[in-house]
Image 1: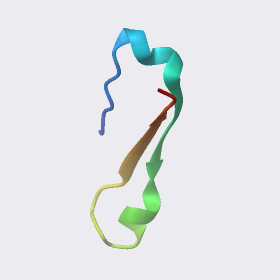
Image 2 (image 1 turned 120 degrees about the horizontal axis):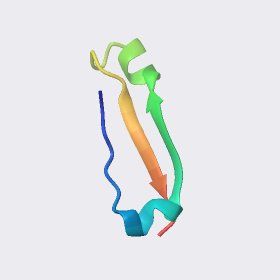
Image 3 (image 1 turned 120 degrees about the vertical axis):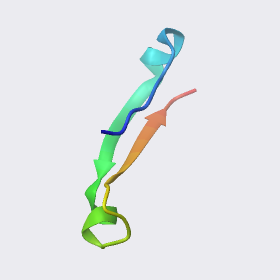
Image 4 (image 1 turned 135 degrees about the horizontal axis):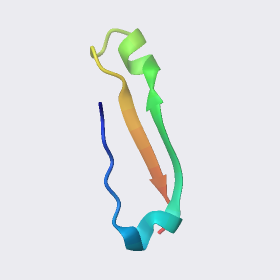
Amino acid sequence: FAHAFVTAAHTAAIRDCRYLHAIREAGLSDHAAMTSTLAL
């Protein structure tokens, strides 16, 4: 599993966190990529 760590002070800034399965499905990796968006 992929992880993204954010300090308690920044949890309100989390806007999005998801897996990008297209990376794995395209054969570029045997893992899905993970992306996180923060409003800092």
